[in-house]
Image (cartoon, rainbow, N blue to C red; front, side):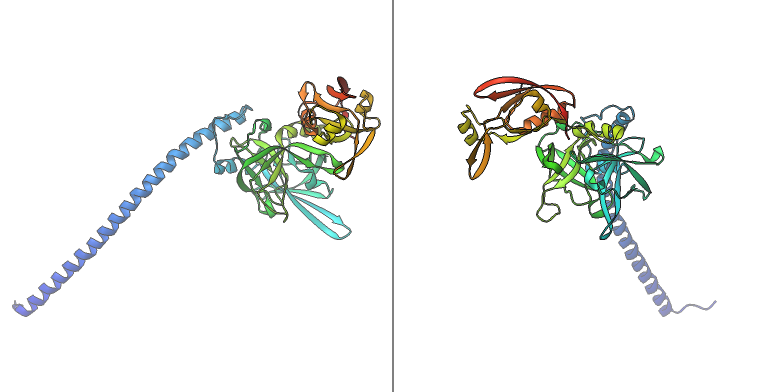
Length: 400
């Protein structure tokens, strides 16, 4: 066997040394990369662990909430849900409503929102969404689209009920909460279809309570909820939810110079929904309790001219013919005066109480009879007439 020259051995040795150094460096780089990735994975694992703990807590709360809903009990109001959970809990209950009408100017399509009320397929929305009388279609979040029919509507509360024929599995009713328990500053969530953007959720707070909205005929919706949760065209008829996933209002209007969100939205209170909707389902309409007077809240100027001790109460300026007020003997004004450039009729009865509750203005009367009274119920009005205080019994009629 021929001997390998020493110079060749040197070249082979150098090559082996080079390969060893190269491979060692390569594996060292891989090791460093793996070490860095391992540290990153450890950090991510720690984050996931924290998120998992939080998630477990929310899942436990959600399970309790679902158990309560299944057993038709009120949700556990010690459990506050996040916006994400509220969205996932309600998204299958909120629908997009389209109303197609044929007008002298062509085809018109209006959009709004509704939410499932019961397993019979009744859906709550706003009256102004469906009042055109056009063809109504309903689209669920999974894309299922069906025709709907109008069951009943009430322009004085801006509420309406429509009905769809779908399987029970498709219907996930939302629970109604108690709007009288709301407090200013608590979080609320609006779910709807602004500008046709399906099932969007916005978060805000209760900005104020007891607002008024004027409806057709000059009547007022009272006890209205004001919120800064973003409400835009298309949100009308959607639910306003509290932090327990209950419907506390039906989003209905915004105050805006541009017609879009400006931080002031309004919702019909759920306690009014609770009174109106069963009647709409049963009869197609709702009868609002009614006294039948027109007038003004007492101002300092009115109080001075009428010799009242303080500027409070509701001054009756006129009594409507055939109304409960006329039957009860309430009296309107008999003297015209000018206050700040406007003619005002004074001299009529001043209502200062109803069933023992103080009345400082018309809102106190309307809130009381809308919340607690029905057509045919009796009330006792405390009035000031010709300087003396007296009580007048009255039976509430139906608003014409």
